Length: 414
Image: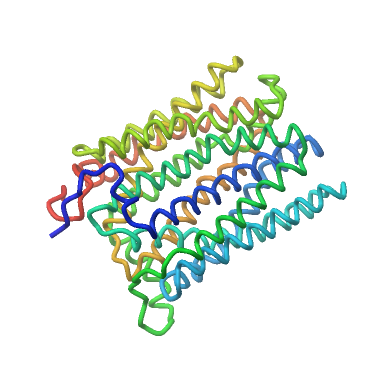
C-alpha cells in the first residue's frame, strides 16, 4: 500500500541529503540558463543566423539520442550521486572553455558547437541520473512534495538565470561565463556532500535485454507512454526559445536585458504554479489537468508569435510557463510513481531523450522553419500544432486522461 503523503509543504527539506541536492540542482540549472542566454545572444550577434540558433539546440540533443542505450544503464548500475557530480564538473569545463574563447576574442561558431556537443554528452548522462537520484533521497510519502520543489528549483533558476544572464552579458560576456563557471563548480561540491543513498542497482549482467528494459516498460505501460510522448510532441511543436534573440532584437526591439526578461517570463509563470502545487497538490482529475495545461501552452505560444508588444509577449510567455509547469508536475509525478526503482535510470534516460527532443530538437525545428518562412509563422504554426496534439492525445490515451489522483498505481482508471 502506498504511503500517505504527509501534507507538510516543506516535507522534502526535512531530509538533509535532499536539501543539498535541491541547492545543487538549482545552481546547476542557474548556471545553465546564464550559459544558454549568453551563447544564444553571442551567436546571433556574431552570425545573424536563425539557422545557427536552431543548431545550438540540435548539437545538444544528438548526444542524448545517440547515447540513449548507455546513459540509463549507467544510472541504474552505478552511483547516481557520483555521476551527477562528475557531470557538473564537465559542465564547468565547458563553461570555462567558452569563457577562455571569449576572453581571447576567439569566437568561432564551429568551436562553440564542439563545446556544446560535449555539454550535450554531459547532459545525456546527467539527466537520467539526476532524475533517478531524487526519489532515492526521500521516502515515498514525500516524493510528490520533492517533485514539486524540484520543479520549483529549476523554474526559479529559469526566472533569475536568464535575467542575470542578460544583465551579466550586457556588462560583459566574460563576466557572464565566469559566473556560470563558478556556479557549476559550487553545484559539483554540493553533490559530493550528499551522502550516498540506497539504490536498487541492476544486478543482471549487461545485455540487450537489460539495456532495452526501459523501452519495454514505457511501451508496456500506457500511462507512462502517453505522458512522455505528450510532452515530446507538444513542446517539439510549441517551443520558441531558440527564436527569442530574434524576437528580442528584431521584433520587440529589446536588448540583452530584454532577452533575459523574455527568457525569464515562462519561469515566472511556472514558479507561481509550482509553489501553489507544493502547497495545494492536485487531489483529483490529474490527467485532465495535464491535458488542459498542454492546450494552454499551445494557446500562449500562438499569442506570443502574433504579439508585437513587449508586455503582451511577456504575459503570453508567463501563461506558457504556468501551463507547462502544471502538465510537467503531473507527468513527472506519474513517471516517478509508476516506475520501479531498478529500471528508473533506463526509463528516465528514454524520458530525457524525449524531453531533449521536445526542447533542443524543438529549437532546431523553430530555427530552421524560421529560416524558411520567418520567425512569426514558425511560432504560430508550432502553437497550433501543440493544441492539436493535446486533443489527439486526450482521445488516444483515455486511461491517462482519466487518471484521478497522483498516488502510486492502485485504483486508478483502467
